[in-house]
Amino acid sequence: MTAAVVCEVCGLPKEICVCEELSREQAALRVRIDTRRYGKAVTVVEGFTDDANVDALAKELKRYVAAGGTVKEGHVELQGDHRQKVVGFLRNKGYTVEERA
View 1 (cartoon, rainbow, N blue to C red):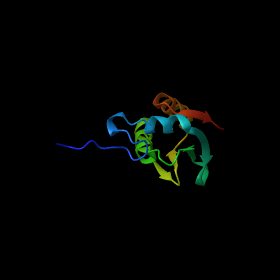
View 2: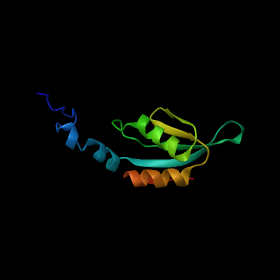
View 3: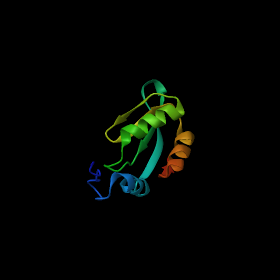
View 4: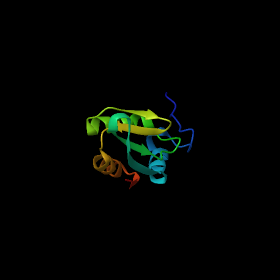
């Protein structure tokens, strides 16, 4: 007999846990463009809550826009100007997104 795995945050079984959906709704993400060395464009996604799985989302974003990137200090950096694609992807995932110049 196996014991049901319980979420530490909400106390519900992992199968019906709502913590991830709540963090998506509460997080107002900001997507902006930044320029780095030699004028290279970098798309920055910031505003994640502490409990959000930023690493997994960064991996999905990198695959979706077909570009390299990293996670630094709780925000995602993608190589190139991918603001439109990233905003659309995050909104489809259920995040609240605001785009900055």
